[in-house]
Length: 349
Image (tube, rainbow, N blue to C red; front, side, top):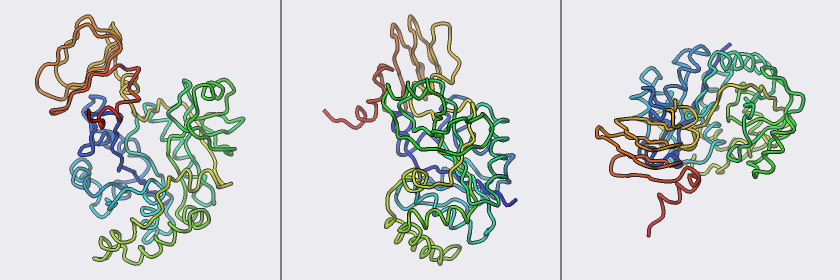
């Protein structure tokens, strides 16, 4: 099996401001304080799936240097630089068309770069099952996470009679729900968080995009004429911005009849907020979390403090707060208001 892994690494992680910024977004940060960035942990997670020369990273032009520094084992030609963000469908199409040029029988896993999976062995087993299922079929397999709470920040996948670790047919993709709907999903069962991890062979994704996103497929056909030549960068800069700006979920997953799910409880998180980071870092006896440098809390409860400096962070008397510092920027915000962090950081008074 000719297996390749495509890592999408172009996001800016604005909900983890100020630690995650457009200059150094969360996928390149040691968010959990474990000595590795999220993208490095992603590569490790797929280490048993394929060799490093078959890893691909699609990212922004301005992050290419960071990717090379953090992932020196990935060939430079496999780091694909988007001239501008066009959402996940064009990102995925670019990588898959380029892989197909030299690997017409490739079987591909597409994954975000900024999530964590704590059940790594089970995850590797699930991905291997999915790859076997898609190698010689026209089907797509997506990974569904067994929900542990009524989460409104994730899309859902509906698959009745699903059994953990077994591939089953998808009934429908669901948009991010309101709280009442999320609670009903959890109560009824058969609904899974959409982790944004997809498995297919190159022929399948080519056919699916031609059927459901022909504008993007047509541009990729033009662009592919320049692949692996000196003209590729110029042609990419000319053609890629013309792609429709659309997610792979909207472009293909919600329309196709060929989608399957492998559901599991993998200890997965997209670490999309300070609250989710807090869930995955050891807490002290007062339910506080400290990440980074020297953090000293007194009379605090239910707080997360991230200190990226060599100096001391002293926090006293807070209950249910986020305190985060990076460079000249500081955030002090109630955990209950973290959904507003993006607008707080952009708002000028």
